[in-house]
Length: 312
Ligand SMILES: *[C@@H]1O[C@H](CO)[C@@H](O)[C@H](O)[C@H]1NC(C)=O
Ligand SMILES: *[C@@H]1O[C@H](CO)[C@@H](O)[C@H](O)[C@H]1NC(C)=O
Ligand SMILES: *[C@@H]1O[C@H](CO)[C@@H](O)[C@H](O)[C@H]1NC(C)=O
Ligand SMILES: *[C@@H]1O[C@H](CO)[C@@H](O)[C@H](O)[C@H]1NC(C)=O
Ligand SMILES: *[C@@H]1O[C@H](CO)[C@@H](O)[C@H](O)[C@H]1NC(C)=O
Ligand SMILES: *[C@@H]1O[C@H](CO)[C@@H](O)[C@H](O)[C@H]1NC(C)=O
Figure 1 (cartoon, rainbow, N blue to C red):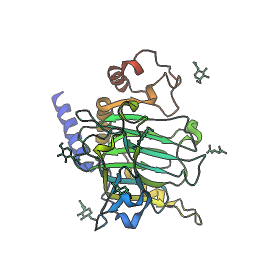
Figure 2 (figure 1 turned 60 degrees about the vertical axis):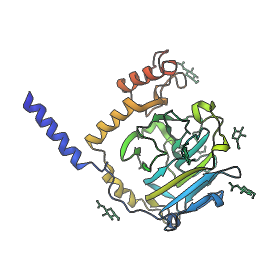
Figure 3 (figure 1 turned 45 degrees about the horizontal axis):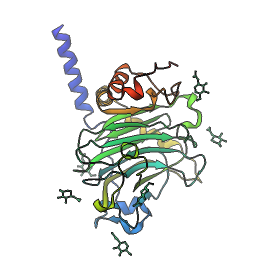
């Protein structure tokens, strides 16, 4: 028995060694000015002198944001982000891909949303996605973070392939969605650009809107750096599908999968997959994990405890 356990341990060590980068290779970093343009509130979009980073802010005059110059069909999109310090209730900082300008009623979107912070409380981050305008079927998950994201830069990543979406925090995968045919158009499938924004989400963001924006603590500043735009730039005149092959190396290792499960069973505070008040039959991509469910029931018995979960 002991020998088997030791071999298992050794195996995990080797796997850990092979995958300590989280499966994300050392991709090249794009300067802000090369990859991005301001989106709105241009006076509040301030690149550093070397263009390695940018700060966006919200003050009494405006909120602000930026977006990538190119659109991409699939890719890995990453940035290191430092969130506004101190009281930031009602302040939403986002890092996401979308095509809502190009396809207003059938847009795709893959999100990271930071939902503001009050002193002494944990930060909450939300992930979500839409496909082909499926905005009446939100697929939100929320988590607390194991660090203070306003203190230092931390890395956030979105992987999007033909059949998969994965979200990363500091190179740890925290959520994976596998496309199933019954999702139909709900899985993002059209070229998207990458966005970063800061805005007033007082009516919903922090504890469901309980705590609101207070400009006396502003200006609110979010900093972004280490941009990775490892996608297939979309060229409407030349429909190339070949670059998807390059995304193959993002296979998730056993060690990463263990880390992902550990994260979800400890830090997840909401998942639409277990919210049967909202979806009496869970959406088709949902996979039932009894430990995740137990954790959510303990954390939020009102949402996840009362009713019996309807199985597919
Ligand atoms: C990663 O890339 C950077 C810049 O391209 C380089 O300086 C660094 O040495 C690389 N790191 C590794 C571990 O390859
Ligand atoms: C907001 O705009 C006013 C008028 O242009 C200006 O005086 C003020 O300094 C601006 N506030 C900030 C924080 O930039
Ligand atoms: C945050 O609060 C601390 C302590 O009150 C203060 O020293 C610091 O300047 C504040 N930071 C910002 C960005 O306002
Ligand atoms: C996307 O939505 C449009 C308009 O609602 C519809 O015509 C189209 O079939 C949908 N595409 C997919 C892949 O579901
Ligand atoms: C922020 O949004 C809330 C809710 O939409 C609104 O009531 C409030 O006036 C806004 N605050 C500012 C400073 O724009
Ligand atoms: C589930 O919800 C849908 C839409 O809200 C409703 O039409 C359907 O009757 C419900 N099914 C069950 C089994 O309760």
